[in-house]
Amino acid sequence: MFDTSEWSAFQSEACGWLRDHERARAARFRFDRDRSAYVLAHALWRAVLAVSLARAPREVPLDFLPSGQPNLPGTSLATSLSHSGPVALVAVGVVRMLGVDLERWPPRIALDELLPAICTPGEAEVLGRLSPGPRERALLQLWTRKEALLKAFGTGLAQAPAAFGAMAGEPVRLASHTEGPPCRVLDLALPAGRLGALATSLDMDQYRLLAPLAG
Image (cartoon, rainbow, N blue to C red):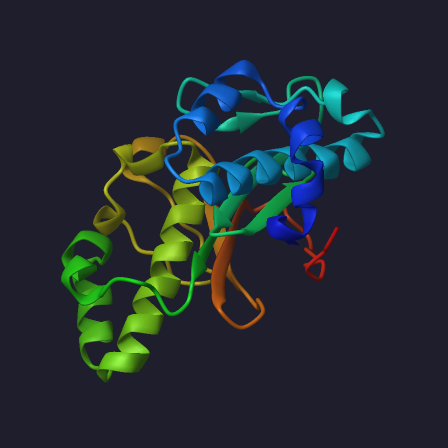
């Protein structure tokens, strides 16, 4: 976990580590702070992978499938990245499937009106019993689980979040992946101001969350 604003002095060097399509996307950001956070998050992602693979950051074979899912061909690793504002969360592991999501808490927009788009009927019923404050937090935590699962399965929002449940720790299959392995999703214990979740295939034995790292 990184606060990218602490690494802003390295932005020029960081930009050189990115692929052409990443630099093109960074150039489309309207605000400098968003562009800087994107560039530094993607560079720090490569720095973590470089340590994991014992290679230089420019030699990390990070690629992206047509779905947008990150891929590390020729290695036994899976990886995922999420960032919210200046904070970036990188996941890497010796697993078949991996996804991570990070969100700001409290959110800047009201979430209640998004409940039908996020929840299964059963999840909506459970959340509907909560008072407004706890319900909003539970709904955002549920969203992080579903986003992490969609990243792990490589579908993105092509799969409707309300079409599958996401109970923490329970095996999850998507209708579009009935032949593949299931995943499970775990809530992450993050510092105040952030909620997050980690989804992996069932071959994960353990995980460790590193403390926020500064430049």
